[in-house]
Length: 607
Image (tube, rainbow, N blue to C red; front, top):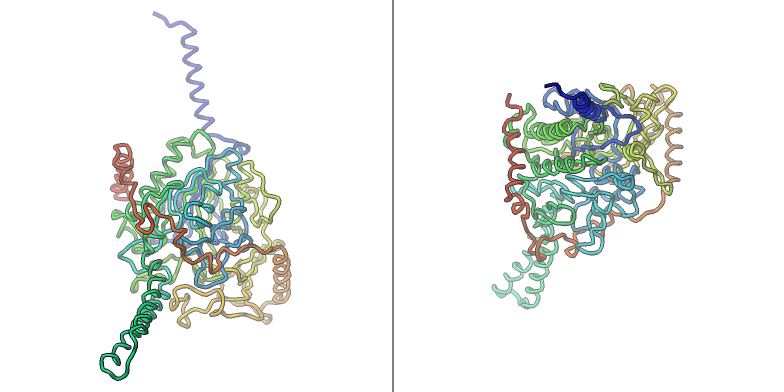
């Protein structure tokens, strides 16, 4: 029996609709608003990736991003440590403009979750700009931009008050103190001095007991008790914070709720990945911004057993490869949901690799390639040059490499542009829209000058001489490496921004475009343009400083000390502690999701 013609016509129409629907998912125009996935590593060296000439660590998924997108070779952080660099990334502004730069060597980044400093509420992040344009915005992972201002639960600096609709992660970040078996990282040498001071004070009442019991001379009990009480109060004043760093700082939250205190470090990577994939699934039908802020590759390098011993670069390399696998899972999800062609993916690091982190002879920090210095070293290239990879199929040319100065601050105006947002007109935005450069509509970066601060101190500046594509770099201040002749500050564990530094007059001059490792020092004898370049950069610095306005300092002594009344607490302070994630994972659905993640870990790279 023949089928009626209209039946075949109907079926053909359905097939065409499905086919065209697939095409609409596969092909997008520049004018459509894409989904946005931002991937930021923590302390990853620019030389740690295969696509940046590393041959000891396997990073196939990040390399895939580079081969399918655009790779930036002069991508620069606005600071060489995490908190100010991330503040600049979120706001498109030098951290000194928002008060997120420190005048002290001790506290270069926020050090306590119970402190009162953080990213000011009057700062507008790219998440808030996109949120106003209808994007669903989520942050998974590390925040490290403060939490509360005046009371424990006001959460004035919380991600949800800075444009994110959803937050799952660490409001502080990952440090070695989060793992009980590791050597404490937070203010390690200060703690040693505090222990010595406590021991010395405790000896005083004991020594006073000697003449009393030997009857050399009489010491009133009141004096002995007073000194003993003073020693105890001194001990209590610092041990109440430093003695419980893991409980106070290593906290896992979902939105405003504490999920784990202290966090279970062995679970957190799997939980973060699960939440990232769930966010994509939840908002795949509307434009979304997902910022995945990895805990990798910050110490203590918490790594799943399946990755331990897998790389040629020890535990650090294992941790890099685990992060790469997580990137791969996110990309697979975008492919499976047919979102890849309609999603801008960006990968970077907050600053360069840290060189001083060692365990015996084993290096636990990153590799910064040919570049001098590392994390915390002011303007030396190794601390501020970071990976920069953009992938947006059908819009950006695959495999393209751009060797022009760009900045993490550029992400703010770039996302605002592609998301249809409007940049604030009441403040200076230091970033530049990268889309013309990425798309090939222009051949040079808009940045003529970039300024490199170490805390609140301007150490270095660079001039991108556009008429000849030369990039000059001038160092006015550099940290003193220790021991002498070393390439880092191994003696102190972190280089200083002031005090133990060297001031240069005339300044050190390098041609970064020809000498990226800053090995060939230029002077009036071997560079005819020396005086002209230095004067040009000094004039630009003078003009830049005219644009700075006084703002509250978020790293003041008061803001950076631990305050019991601001300490987030799951339970009744000071008896804080919970693990609500175990209750959630007890349901069959969540157990299955976590098992799927762990099953993938069982099979990854085993071929």
